[in-house]
Picture 1 (cartoon, rainbow, N blue to C red):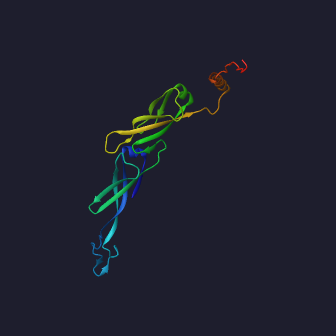
Picture 2 (cartoon, one colour):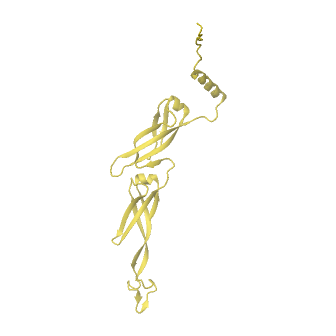
Picture 3 (cartoon, rainbow, N blue to C red):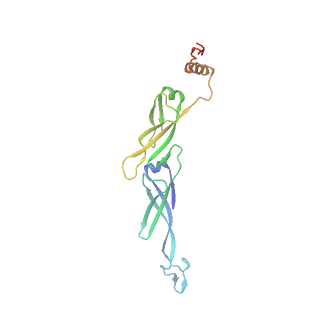
Length: 197
């Protein structure tokens, strides 16, 4: 059977209750299939009946998408549970590594600043250096998913998305025009080459 969990539950571990049906000897005929010379009406002569059973399953931290858990509630039964991890709005996962996108105001990208980066255990402050380009990726070691079989964690990769202003005021437009003028190379008067000289 399969169960769905969140990325947060995959990070911390979780519990789920599953239901299945277990075959048992019929309680009416004692597993014989007959009562005297008459076929047992409870089991239809099979000698067994299905009983619904509920079982709590522990899902370990670090489990991967499509990971499998084997459960043996008794010596006759083995249940294989496949774990599916739902897509997360904040992160995409690759093994023990996570990726996220962080929006940065354009002035902070130009002049430098600080932004909050979401992690699985809360937000952390990231210092954005002046002149950070759109699409720049910052590596946050130890902020990914727990690694299988070890006590450390993967890496969180934060990709910068620079937010450009949608509507500029007249004053802002004037300031950007001044900046554009400063950035535009000035024409230099060069001597004209005369081949007759």
